[in-house]
Image (cartoon, rainbow, N blue to C red; front, top):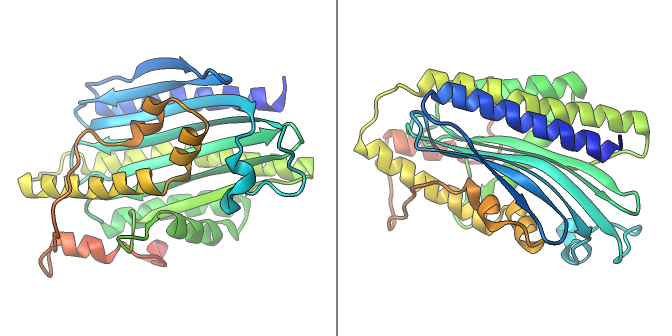
Length: 306
């Protein structure tokens, strides 16, 4: 079995496992399955949960696509493929992408994406990340989340957590709002090595990031899913979801890649919430929970030490 086939199978199994864990936590709603194909090559499986007791809307998507390497990967600075790239090459890309929008405003939104990319010229790399977007930041939960990610990183390389945490701070940032999308997490891209043993170590790290998603998130979900909330908290939740939409549609590289490669729009935009709102010039009162949350939405916070 070729490496890309092994990775594809592993990602499909990860998708299935995460869907089972999430729907078991929800207890009332189940993930639908929508298999799709891409005209240029490949396809995927979109798993969607809606109107559950815990999860208002969520998607766990798997894709494996291939074809001629998109022209923008050779042109844009952020995607530059290097001197070995040839414009008539082909590519293969596979991954799992997750966004969960909970019903209760006290439960945070979560996102994870892990992906593998290779080209016919031998170029290959791993990318991914996992980040938490609370509607209301709870320091204890943010610390728990970051400690879990640090544990995974430290197991593989002592430099990973700080490097990938800073990368996430920079990536999950909304420049026009001058705020981070949430409390961050880790983000990495283009992890590769020409040494086969070193590349296997990178794959092991990449897989462990994927496997830490469910136990880490569900611990936070279980702690907060039954907390009371009012219309005020729900309206704030809708506003924060609006910020989430702004980031995903304006800045997110995965969204851009999917649209640039003629991906399936429904699957690309499954990250959007069922309900969100935009109100004019909302400024929280000093000392409020909303103002406290905004104070955490900046780069460089050491959540592990909270």
